[in-house]
Length: 417
Ligand code: ADP
Ligand code: ASP
Ligand code: MG
Figure: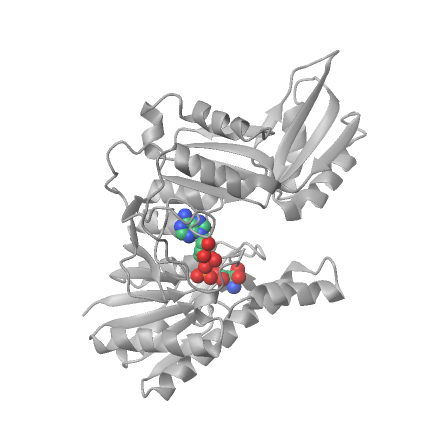
């Protein structure tokens, strides 16, 4: 008998028919003699729909109220899934995140888990229940309801798996594993049998939606056996582990993209010591995450620089810069959206020169200009205009020898994004 954490994402529980199928899948595992703790997301597009609804009433809703609203999505799922399991004659008990013992800090909309006291989960398991926990939510020390960031149910699942020392944490989704790139864009993407925590962490941070970055961090630090598989079939999934066996000669193992990018430029800033510290210190104080920073050459004692932030932080970032104008003279602040950051990732890159150069060649051969570049030991990212995203990802996939003839498996609507 093994202890499984099984996490089902929004698309896997998108309607009541799918909910029934998920219930049967869980029962199948239980009938094999295993213990099951299930984590569920909100049904289908519920979270997006709730966000849209809130904007009809307030275009800048208080973060506390937003968390109060969004956590309802997962609560609907856990109750309905439990009812479905009962209808098939099995015992199940649903819990909110706080009932399951998730304590977080008090940063609304991107709270971090402080600790987990899962005694109610363990008690319910001990009395023979299938336990169902709402993903993405917790409660702060002061009793406020919090959420873990979009896609955060993966993190609930992995953190819970670590806390209850589960044997395996299975992430069930609408594709049957982790691919060399998003299989919705590249139909000849390659399914990976395994991938290292570090490479997956990089891909997740760079936009591969298949796993939430914090979930991978948690899995790495707690050595959780993590597997991504499909809720639509029984295909072998992809294992995320410390040392993944790499195919011979593979330099780039994955390609990710992130459309959640805004570029902000500050033009004509006096080239004085401490300027960058002032700008980025003020942005950090406002809790705005900055990603790529590029400073161009100095002309007549003035410099230009650009940086990227998440789209939803663009207006706040511009506001922070405008507040600085009196102490930090500059000519103009501009911003640009409709961008995408495309990244190639591979542990093998360190020992292979020319990997970045090939990326630039492929992009320029498509007649596309690169607006920003950033590199680390195992990745290269380029920011470009969004329009040709698909062409670039496909061309890079081919150029790095990742194309395969096997068919990808994609469940649910084909045009999800
Ligand atoms: P869930 O609702 O189950 O949490 P998500 O939409 O968050 O599902 O994640 C699954 C999606 O991630 C897939 O449908 C796929 O389009 C996308 N994806 C992006 N990059 C990858 C990749 N490298 N491998 C597999 N899926 C990926
Ligand atoms: N329902 C939340 C979201 O859509 C959390 C999740 O699905 O993981 O972001
Ligand atoms: Mg997800």
